[in-house]
Image (cartoon, rainbow, N blue to C red):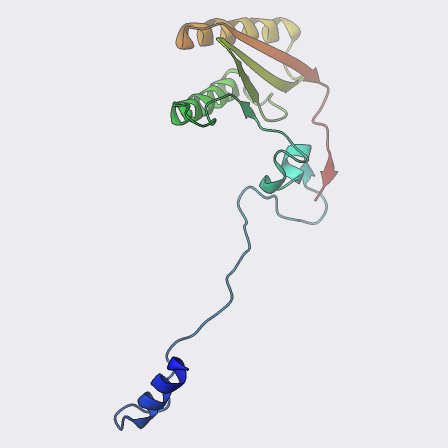
Length: 163
């Protein structure tokens, strides 16, 4: 009712024409979230299980890649853990160059840090064992807590589907 009166008042003013009386444009909200999604291609793009599902399926179809109690109510240090997770992932990507097949899963249990990942069989086993021990030792000294690497090797990257 107030809007109709305001519109009548605007039309009654002599210096405002009909085109200037309606400058407000409304459009529906664009609800297309595109972050962390793999775009559909010609059917030749290899996609893993983690990449195939969008982020809103975390906890339903896929799990968290970092498990810790920092996000509980009253707990501090969530930002520091996020920075540590980013450092760990970059460190492992540099330690095992071109060999990481899937995303790294980090689990913190009390004082123990467990790092699980899948590796391709591009490196000889002796070098792989050396790099695993090297990474465990360095990360244990960096974080001043025991670090355990759980490494599994695959002959090639296992496709979930092609997009």
